[in-house]
Length: 170
Image 1 (tube, rainbow, N blue to C red):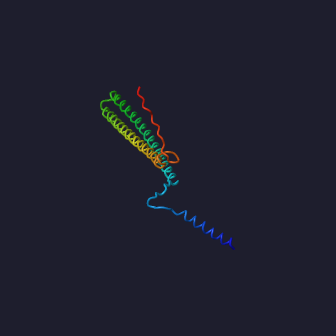
Image 2: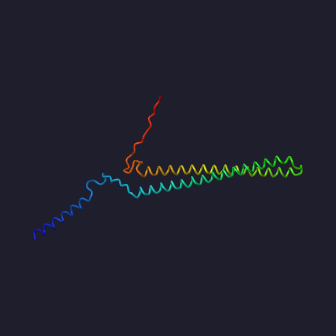
Image 3: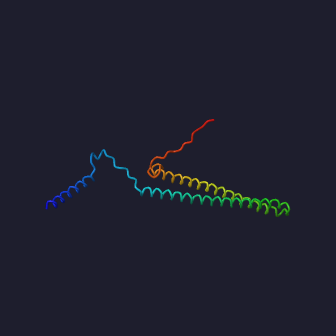
């Protein structure tokens, strides 16, 4: 019976001591809580960065499409300008009564060529804007990854040493 009481008392003391060790000791206002870096945040940062990179790639694709469209407009404008020039050159060989209608057709072709050129210029401006947006998104993704990983210092978040190039003057 003595061993049964001894075992019960020992078990009660072990349980109370384990419970007491789980409680913090000292003044809680002076103690700082440990810094926790949840894994979910890193995965979220990685996901956001990959989304930004994907969107930047879509913008680059749209910009390339705009450039192709601008090139097509430029080719059309060149073709229309050549046709207008040919009509003006041939106007000298036709009857004087028909010259006015030929010059009007040439002027219409020149106006369409000018419109195609302006559309090409507008498409090129839009392509440049899309590329600027894509570059900005890639920069934001890189910054997000650096901030999310504690400054880009690797998997433990230690600050990485940046390599600087030595300036040499000869």
